[in-house]
Length: 103
Image (cartoon, rainbow, N blue to C red; front, side, top):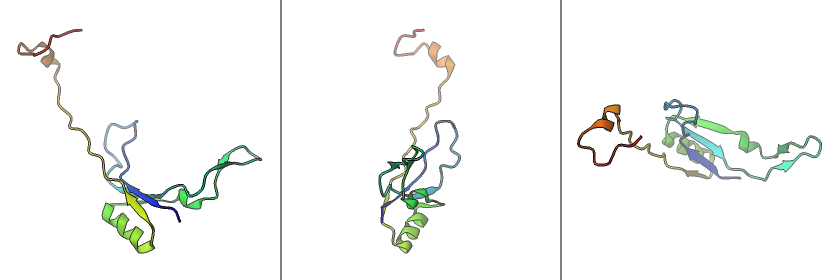
């Protein structure tokens, strides 16, 4: 049986907000390598666990599910977002600037 990974999904590159990043996801690691189908030329695998993706409200709920089902798992900690410093266009013209203003 392959190891499951529990993580908090990051925001996609196409979104600026934090929608759908609060929950936790349990998904299995790849159990067997992918191979090319000789008839179609598509990549495929016999590993059906790779298609399973379970969503949970909390990390503790995901861990409790994995323990109850006897699934080996590892938890990736949630990454902290850097603090956003507010900026103003008027700061470019302040008289107490430390560095020179350039175009």
